[in-house]
Length: 133
Image (cartoon, rainbow, N blue to C red; front, top):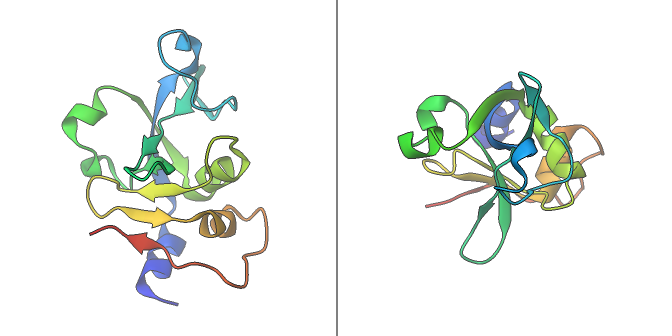
């Protein structure tokens, strides 16, 4: 097991930014699935797009990893990491996750997200997670 896998296996919860799903007229719906509820508010996770057009659901290992200007725009919830992976697997928008996108930027490709979600057995030709430079 490499250092990245050890870190992912030890990751219990992540912080997820989202928008109030009741304000769909103001914000584009990111996914038709209600992700989590915070004080009875359905929350739709934020979605980040890379320059190459790929989309990722962002999550953070701690609120200290979140830039100040980003903190105040969203509602935040702490979610079990594997539950967040399961959400991404079931999503109709994208199936990849980026952990700490503004600092260490660890990208989990779809097969790794499936593996950590526990919804399917991991693929035999599993890709390695990618760290952005």
